[in-house]
Length: 568
Image (cartoon, rainbow, N blue to C red; front, side):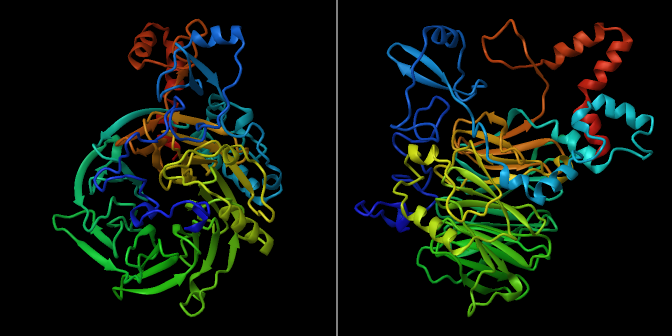
């Protein structure tokens, strides 16, 4: 933990040492007096806040133009920051993410070609150069070649055209929500809250109905991670405890088993865990810098691997073979392991990926055994190719950068030098770096978008400012910055087969994001540049149109549901 604090700073208490606990928190709520959570007004901590933020100069015409707009707290669609100035509250616009991301390394990789092929953008018949109605017409007449329907690439391109953009709260808790994820088939949604309850919702056929609540056992502060079993029948969860717990999802009976990991540390926590694809093992990363593997058939811990110099915050399998493992820690390194070669006597990684300048909070695999992304406290997401490990100078540069960090992301704002830095460390072998989201307070998650509906064209992440940030994986630019929460969004989950994103926030809200058509009104700029079309009003207008026009507009307005239902 020494890399987090300056040499002369006071060493925190054991309670403050917890990566998921902030200074002065209570065990029940984790709240702090004068809470430092970020908000869209730029008050508190966040990537765009802090004492070293720039005030900026305002031209009079600029001020008058900006004052004509209203900024809705935590719902500002204009991407602005409210700045107090005497009796007048000025709105200072700001950009989102890198204006010109460096894509040179990515452009030279086969990753780009894979994504282009998966989204039909590398074919002679290129959907981006056409429109969806033209694609429908060509399909009806059998162009570009006779087939029964759209290709998988065309389906992915159509699906990626409808990125969820409108939120409604489907659940509200009185405590912070930490985990939220869809099951592999998308029929169940799981949420874990600081009230020590794990709630299961039936989300099949557009429903969102709670059907089971599991009271978590032996919880220290909160449930910190959860995972579904590959068969969808069980779940596991972890907290500050010597054991992880296994529970059944269906049935009138209750299975609630503690899987003891027998740690050597007095205070122990598994920060990240997952099932193997064959359902036989559970992999976990812990605060003692070790990887743990629990064998479900033998009902015992079979491996404890010393993997990192600090907390292991993230673990993942590379693909369905369950032979290649990834781990990421507070030492800023991502390590790659071969399960077939792992032993406690020979705890050597296959290779290491270095390039982050601060600790890693989450890892997600593309499930192709080659590519993964890592989220970090240096406020970036990096895309990696495991065929390109970092050289020794890269490891040394990353270790040195992490050791030079003298701020704590749990309760301090992001230093200006961190949020404005775009320099690439020596030996950084990442394919791409994504900037524009905030990582504060907790282990914020990021993931690839689903392969079936988007061709994994996007990367999406939670954000300490209460947003869900969606990046184009090839350009590095922000596609959507979805604002709807009043506190940090810790977890995000995109439905595997439908255009829906669930966001889990520290405001206790489960947000369901769906696509809705936007209408720009050039004469009315009082609220924002974008207005949500009222569905009842649109139906009323549609009935007044001629049958021919009505049929055409009706087809367009129902594209998300009709197309997705047909082609997915």
